[in-house]
Image (cartoon, rainbow, N blue to C red; front, side, top):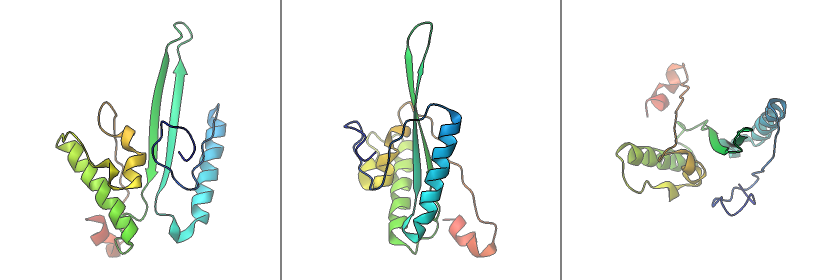
Length: 144
């Protein structure tokens, strides 16, 4: 992201690209990102971590590339914030378009959907994990 190269079309302020070689470096990077997100306070609506993996078969030399997107959409149910509501609606529109096999899902509606575009649709496998607040005061947000 940011200045990572021409292959990425979305520029995200404050985004960084780091190379890691092992699991420990990855854990450290995740901890650093979580700490930075928590310092962001109310201005941080979403945290997205993109993990690009490259594996090389030693016997054949063939390379396999994969990309994982981890998006923490905390606050998505809090529609009082207009920016969060716009992101939520854009993600909903993309998911509906993909589910109905529309030829051109509306990824350009929001930066969030642009960032995760190559991880949704086509040959990509997408999983959505929801965590819902247990409090009765959160019930209406959970059901939106």
